[in-house]
Image 1 (cartoon, helix red, strand yellow):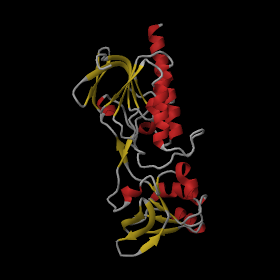
Image 2 (tube, helix red, strand yellow):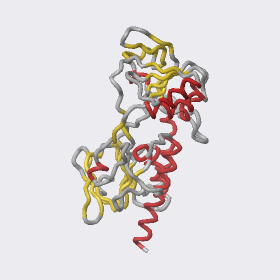
Image 3 (tube, one colour):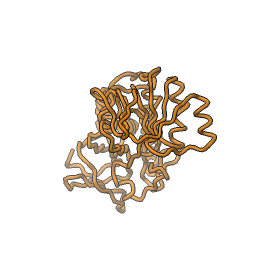
Image 4 (cartoon, one colour):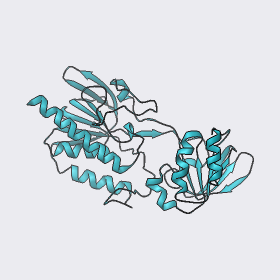
Length: 302
């Protein structure tokens, strides 16, 4: 496969979104290359939920089965490597791997995911995706009816509060410093018996990633079995920006309803282009991106 350096489509990222796009393209007989570094964002998450037919399986089980199924389409090729650069060329795009080798394609699908920026709090990274979680739809049912924290402030914390309170009556917001709520929000939180703790967080005490206590810088501790955390992220790679793709105010790749970026011939799907971080959404947007790229190629050839 290494001898072939020209493809109709290069997909950067081979997790759920990338594989879903590849299946749509493989079934349309398109010559596709998937470049995948093998570093998914959810590598530590024990189980995946809220995806029909796959509920409760490990992320690895789902992606392994998906890759096996995509491999049945012989026009789809795989490279386990890191794509580091991308540029526009007269006939499409050129993508460079870490070892310096380059590949060209008429179209690009960015399925590169995002990289979470873990806060400098002892124990946080060990719990991330296990008991310190990001999404009540993906993880909430498994952490229902327990003493729960929301590690966030302002609008993000207020957005999460009703969703999490639907799952537990024992809820505290940890702002990790001066709180950022307006008067109406504070009244609403108080009415719903949601405490706001402004103490700065020192440590997340846990056992094998399972949260037990939050330790504050004043030496005090509180017992929690689960915590929702709103943490910043960045794009996994600079390639989208290098190719001219616009980002949203929040840092996602800007796409339309058909997953097309502002750059002709480049599509994006999955976590890199939406705050809806779930396996189901990644698969859905990957399928759309693959179908739209095939449609574009077909019209160009017609």
